[in-house]
Image (tube, rainbow, N blue to C red; front, top):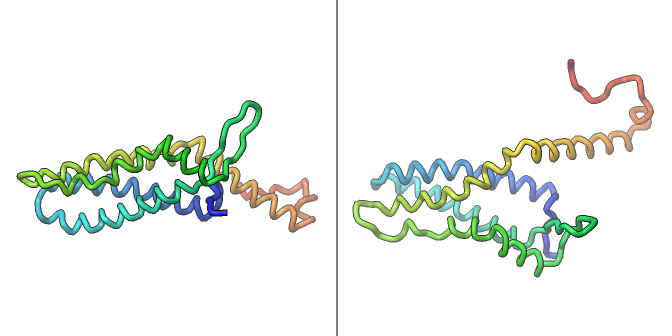
Length: 170
């Protein structure tokens, strides 16, 4: 009841937003680490907003369904104790370590901004979306669902074998 579908549209949109934040914030963190002077303060405000998004992402992952590989089949685990335990034992550390505010440790010559480089660990999550086979599988699934819905709603379209309705122009 309190878990989140890992293939739901709302989660997929949120995951796309988080992935975008991972990529953008990684470049921001490199800029903050490179500047190393007081003007980085305004950029740090934006970094706090990103950190809030990543905290929400960690909470959501504790409630997120996951697919469990069985001997002969794949089952979806929906029980909250298993979903949170699975997340804590797999990729939680990759999300938690960058959240730790090491940059607040005072160092001389404003070198504490170099701790923003630790937050570059999120780059793996940003590049994960660029996995072409996974991306194409998701796009195919979206169009398959859309086509099946159109066929169910339109009997003429379902029985038309002469016309090409895939809207691909040669």
